[in-house]
Image 1 (cartoon, rainbow, N blue to C red):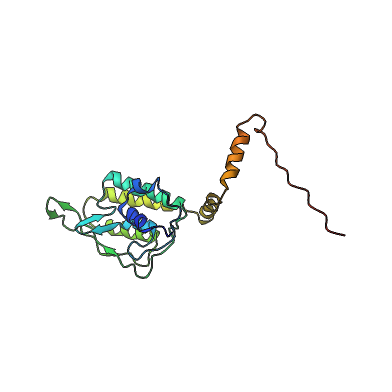
Image 2 (cartoon, rainbow, N blue to C red; image 1 turned 120 degrees about the horizontal axis):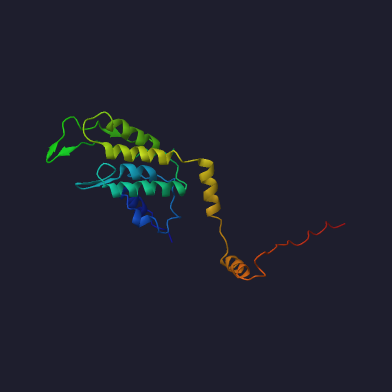
Length: 203
């Protein structure tokens, strides 16, 4: 039976840590791409829009921004690469601005930022550049982006791949039960393993 991956993309874009942190998500392709969300790491930064509602780093509460950062750590631990780029169909662009009451803060609107052909590193860098060249109080958003950049910088491809390989080695349930029984007894606390002697080649 094919497993549903769409909900994982949606949860990433929404920054919903509660949906993902304890779920069975190891089957998901963490280096996969999506025409709407780009890559898993890009989805956590760019977010999504639903009608009049926008879910991203510029609209979230401090708690939601922390969830996005926590999910970024989780996604990296699953083997996602911040170097991965979105597919050619990914053509999302965004602009942000500040408001006071019902009025837009003068000179606070950012240029239109295009995310096509950018990795997660590139997306974060583009957002940082956009927000540092306009008026308005962007301290919270800039802190999120800089924290995201620090998290992405922890990625090491060799270490990540080795960790994933270790985590995904299948072990028969019977073998685990056998070791549990052995180690639960005094006699089995210091076991030794022996392999059968190799047969000599026929003469």
